[in-house]
Amino acid sequence: MKQTLQLKTSQHLALTPQLQQSIRLLQLSTLELHQEIEQVLSDNPLLERLDDPLDRSVRLLADGAINNAPAPSGEAPAQQPGGEEGASGAQGAEAEGGEGAGGDDAPAGDGEMDWNDAPRSGGGEDEDGRPQLEASPVTLREHLMEQVRMTCIAPRDCALVELVVDALDDNGYLEESLDDIHGRLPEELGIEFDELRTALALVQSLDPAGVGARSAAECLALQIRRLPGVPMVTRRMALVIVEKYLTWFAQREFNKLKKALDCDDEDLREAQAVIRQCNPHPGAAFASDVSDFVVPDVIVRRAKDGWSVQLNPDVMPRLRVNSLYAQALKQGKSETQMNAQLQEAKWLIKNMRQRFDTILRVAQAIVDRQRNFFSHGAVAMRPLVLREIADTLGLHESTISRVTTQKYMLTPHGMFELKYFFGSHVATEAGGEASSTAIRALIVQLTGAEDPKNPLSDSKIADMLGEQGMVIARRTVAKYREALKIPPVSLRKSL
Image 1 (cartoon, rainbow, N blue to C red):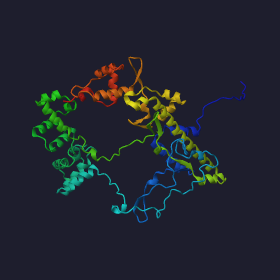
Image 2 (cartoon, helix red, strand yellow; image 1 turned 135 degrees about the horizontal axis):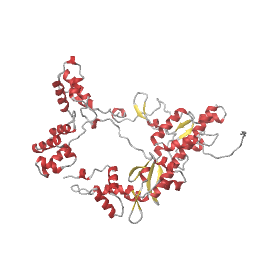
Image 3 (cartoon, rainbow, N blue to C red; image 1 turned 120 degrees about the horizontal axis):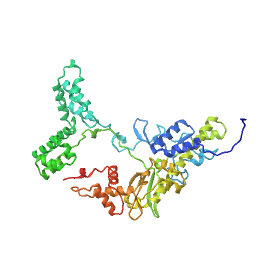
Image 4 (spheres, one colour; image 1 turned 90 degrees about the vertical axis):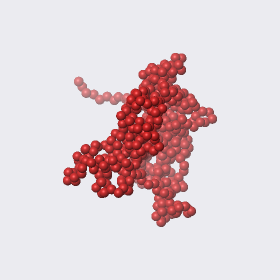
């Protein structure tokens, strides 16, 4: 067969670097976005950030005092989309304008405060107006050892107590058995097992009550013995419950408990009140875990004609091209590498603005279709799928999925991820559809208003929803109840 050359024209989709960056920025969360920006700022000297988080950091004065320096006065506040800086808060118009990228009105070096020129704190306050620094949190080990040092025990006993304290977990429980601890001690120390048992008894007498326990039953028993103002009969019954019948108590088997303890409802109710005063995790209060919080990407407010959506200016970084480098590029005094970095800076500013524009459009489309939710709550949520928003905005479903992942909306009813407003539907007797989110909200309402002595079963909840026109099976109710972390009917029953 003879080989020949042919010229053929065809179309195909290519993911350019700019498109790849746009897709990546769109699917990042707010925290990941700022981390990405910091990395780009460190790699690209032509890009600079106006809203530097360090502008409001603690600074030192000339005399060594601490001063919270204000942000430089030359910075303009962040603006909403449609303002001078676009949707991303960046001066993208200047960056994409070609030769004058970055503008000449932003001199380099602004934003840095001289150590000697920083204003001093005003007088009239304690410690010359210096702010108080937050003390480091006290750990459980430090709290226990501080109590041990206040006791008059021998150094040998103190070392054994410290050995037991080091074996406690974050909840205050003793992870290892005394036999294992005694077995790994060197024989030449001559430590007897009774000495280790005495050290554990000393740890269990410290604050918080219940620390040093080897099980949940022992932890509760230690606390019950130290509770003040409890009648002896009630205290004894509570101890018997946690030491022998804790499983029945957790499963709310009250009939079995009354038969085993030979008591009535009132006696069992008093013992139950004593047990509920105890903390099964006494060491958790000293945990140093910092609570995570979510910053909303968009904010929904009531307007005259309904509900409006606005971007949160606190999450919109303000970027621009450095004016000195832009001037050098304009005069032709740069290298090819700087031209490439300038193009990358333009792409980033443009893609940032496009990212926030897309988030705002999707959020507004969601609000337009879920107006009943914002007016009446979760019970008025309507079914919604990604395709409906995608067809309205002329975008692909994958784009809507990226926008609604790890993006949050602040509403009058609380903070919600954008994916929260999408859900499957359940048929109604009238031929309509009900959102699964609305059904879950109804389940919460029904279980919250039930009689604690006679809670609603899953079948009863399904029947009550059926009376409201929602055709739903018992297994579906059980699935929604478990997703809401609502205990089953046996664990919701009380005396």
